[in-house]
Length: 256
Image (cartoon, rainbow, N blue to C red; front, side, top):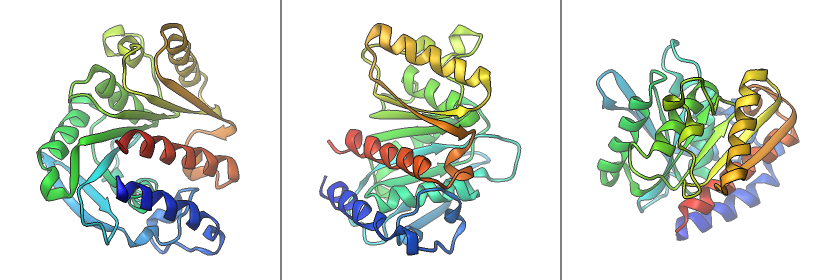
């Protein structure tokens, strides 16, 4: 708890000086920059499933087990997405916010997401992670396997989940995150890009509508002028505000 409070204070203070900060790593690709985020200590290329690896980002001076965020990338088929600037940046932001960031390669398969969560839980002590406090964040195509895993609770109950501009409803009901949304579901934050694929946005609207109907804990935040991938493609105040709210949401649900 103390680490989260310290991380929050540092993150808020740091944003005042972010304009002068130059991240020398691939993490510079993300719209929100917290001075010193590149100093995160990274444990790289941990095998969590045959052929699949993850990285763990923690503050260099962290001495306790930290709550963890697993970041599920979009597009598959390209070499090691966990090493893209987008996910390096999010891992660094998590570490700079008093959390552990876990980036991992997957094959757009909920079974891979579940395996990563189970591995992190089972190996929390050696990874410096509190396995009882985990959230998952999905981006683009990674939203589907991440949210399906979270809402089905196929890897156990998570503290929360976040969906960035990705599909939350698909034609096959048994494979649709919307199907498994309940009033008692873990809290979900949905970030929608106003200028995005119409099918994706219809699926988001349907998910949010069901949440309102049944009283599920879902928060929607919209980047009205944002395009798909706004956290890396639009380095403006609205993107930064959404990312800050995301980190606040994650800290809120991982704090206790």
